[in-house]
Structure formats: C-alpha cells, structure tokens
Amino acid sequence: MNRLSVLFTSSEVYPFAKSGGLADVAHSLPRALSKDCNIDVVMPLYRFVDRKKYKITATNEAFEIVMNETVYPVELYGCDYEGLHYRFVYSPVLCDRDFLYGTAEEGYADNALRFALFDRAIVWMLKNYAYDIVHLNDWQSGLVPLLVLEDKTIQTKTLLTIHNLAYQGTFDHKILHEIDVDEKYFTIDGIEFYGQLSFMKAAIAYADMITTVSPNYAKEILSTEFGCGLEGFLKHHKKKLAGIVNGIDTEHFSPSDDTALTAPYSDLRGKAKNKSAYLKERGLIGVRKPLFMFVGRFTWQKGMDLLIEALPKIAEHECNIAILGEGEEKYHSALKAIADEYDNVHLEFGYDESLSHQMYAAADFLLMPSLFEPCGLNQMIAMHYGEIPVVHGVGGLADTVGEYKKFDAKTNKGCGIVFGAPSLYALLKAVDQAIKLYADKTHYNTVAKHNMGCDFSWQESAKSYLGLYEKTKQKRSYG
Ligand code: ADP
Image (cartoon, rainbow, N blue to C red; front, top):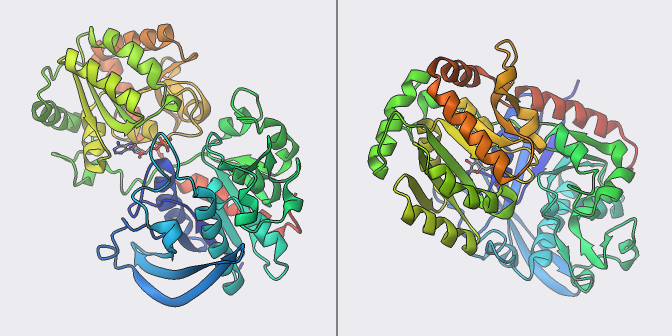
C-alpha cells in the first residue's frame, strides 16, 4: 500500500509555541504517525517563535490572499526538527502579536480574520501539494473543509479533531464579509450559530470525518451538559464522529533521561531524590508528607473554583501542595491569598516546562478536579512519573484513570482516586482517601509502580488515526 500523505494543521505546536495540550499533541502525534505515513505539520509563525534556535528559514513560496478587496501578503517558512518537516505561515496580521490568541480574559478582536488567513494559506498548500488528508485541529482550522469543498480542484479529504468544544471561534456575523465567506453558508445546517459565525460548527458541518480526543468525550459532547450548544448538531453528524484517546510523548516525558530532573529515575524509589530537592528549593518541609501538585491553566474548566474552595481544607492536613500555572486574574489573587496564609502551599505563576517536569517527578499525587476534560495529558504524565492522580471522573480522565480500589495489575490502565461529582465534599473525600493510601506504603507503592509501568505512548492511538485516514480517503464526499 502507498504511504498516505498528510498535512497536520495546528495553531500551536510544541516546542515552537504552546498554550496547552493541543501543542503537545501537535508535537507528538505526527511523530508517531510519521513511521507509517508522510506527514508535514503547519502552524503560524508567530513573532515570538524562535527562528534562530529551530533554524526556521524562508522558502521561496510567497503569495497574496485577497479577502474583501484587501490584500494580505503570506510567506511560507520551513524547518526540519527531530525528523519531521514543519511548515510555517507568516502573515503580519496573523503573526505579529505577543500572544497566540489574546489574554486569558479576552481573545484578540480580529481572531476571525487572523485564522481565516491561516486557513486560506492551508488551502493554498492543498492546491499546490498533493496531500491525501488534511488533519485539522480545533476551530482555528475550522474554515478549511468549507474552502476545500468550494475548490473543486482539491482532492484532499478533511479530518477535524476537536480538542476542546468549549472554544468554538464564534464571531459577529459581519465578519463574513471581511473574510470573504459566502452568505449562503450562513444557515442552521452550516456555519450559523445563534446568529453568529462559528468556525467550529463550520468544521463539523463540512469535514469528512471528526474525532475527539477520548471515546468518553465523544459520547459526552452529544449531551446538553457537555455539548456547548452543539450537541444537536453533533448528533446529526454522529456517523462521522469517533473518539481516539490522546497519548503522551514518552521520549519527551521520560523520567529515566529527563534532563530537567535533579536525578532521573527508572523506578519508583528514584522519585525520593527529586522530591527532597524540590521541597528544599521551594522551602517546603516534610519529605515524609504526601506532596500534592496541580499544574495547568487557571480557568474554570480545570475546576479552579472548586480547588480554591478546597485548598485551605486540604492544607490543614499533614501534606504539601505545589501549584504551577497561569490564567485568569481572579484565580491568581485567590491562590496567592491561600499561598500567603499556608506555609505548606507553594505557588508559582507562569509557564515553565522544566519546572513542571520537576514537579511531576517530585509529587506523590496530582490533583485534577476538572469540570470537564476532553482528554487531559497531565494525569498520564503524572502516572508515567510514578504519581497517583486524584481526578474528577469525566471525559478522558474516566478513560485513562481506573479506580485504584479495583486495581488490576494485568491491565495497561493507570490507576488513581476517581471522584464522581465536582463537589467540595467529593474532592475532600478523595483527598482523605489519598492521604490514607499514602500512609499504607505497600499499597501506595504497588499502585504508583503499576502506573509507571503502563504504556501511555501514542502507539495504539496512532494506529487508530491511520485506520481513520485510510477510511476517510475512501470517502466520496463529506457528510
Ligand atoms: P489543556 O486543557 O490546557 O490543553 P492538557 O492536560 O491537555 O490541558 O495539557 C496540558 C499540558 O500543558 C501538559 O503537558 C501540562 O504539563 C502543560 N502545562 C500546563 N500549564 C503549564 C505550566 N504553567 N507550566 C508548564 N507546563 C504546563
């Protein structure tokens, strides 16, 4: 069989630009797929991407995109990095910004225009290179299926992965004109969403195939609770919807040769040195006390309100708590007030990849009280580093974390403490369970050791994507 040729599009790719799990997936999934298909990855060349470090250079491809009689110049750049070919779209409107999408409080006002440009540049590539499949990720690539459909010369099939349905790229209807999208698509079966234009809905409507990042989330988004208003529309397109669980890059997240760690380790005992180094550096006391950690975006999705309510009560226990992240201002100040009051709560603001690795290596438990979680990577990274996650059993957390009380050493599923409702009572009860489990060293070690031995790599999921690419290629038209 001929190797498929795939263009993988993402608005963020680690290590060039990252705001969350999408960047990790856009880094590691194409690497896993590249063993069995020819794959290029394309992203915007934001001005903060380090061109020198990654040897990103201009190709001789430059063109203009005209929308609403305005001309936008586009240049394509490229680099080879760790065995993959990356393409970059540079256009001043899209790229000359300080952030990817705006601040945690507010997206840039012209995001529709920015990503319409990105999408039209992707379509330019599809016209000029013979890709079998374009694998689109989230709303930022949402117009591509519609544009492909309009251009009868393009044979490429479109597959959309929804990483988080809460971010839909909805904009004022007026923008249609500015981005040159025909009014005829602005219907209930098309791109119209409660009087606005929705990039995500456009992609759902016209993509040949849709996936989400875990089987459970694929079911959840068909319900009112998790469908973000698109549940009915998704049900209508259910035939082309599948759920494939994310993996992690086990080379990048590898406790045995992780250069960010004080002492890389290949068995559970090796965590001790990392824990004492971390506690010492951060002025925390008590290597024998359980260390809980939280890392992530400070936003309501991650259960921040619940965590902030619970933290003072958790901190009353004999334990330490380490928090790293950034996000909404109201959460920053609430967390800071708690960290100021409790000596055993250590808080660091910002995005710090190395520090997050050190925390995964040091901590005994990961707290993840997300209200919803399409897949979640933190819990898999944590288990891979020999931690036990304490999670709300929702979305991908339910798919990837089994209940430690029903622990079966023969399965490849990691284990943790899974609570059923995002309530203060349930979270505190789960933390109590964690503290009791920690006191039972033999039991704790058995579960943590099992977690360290599980396979969280992309291997199986990459196979599922390949199968889906083949199936999508055979499709005659969307729908
Ligand atoms: P999201 O909803 O943000 O995409 P995921 O669990 O899918 O959440 O992925 C989060 C990824 O980002 C993980 O690799 C996590 O370790 C990392 N991460 C999140 N916040 C930070 C931070 N402040 N510093 C370092 N890494 C972070």
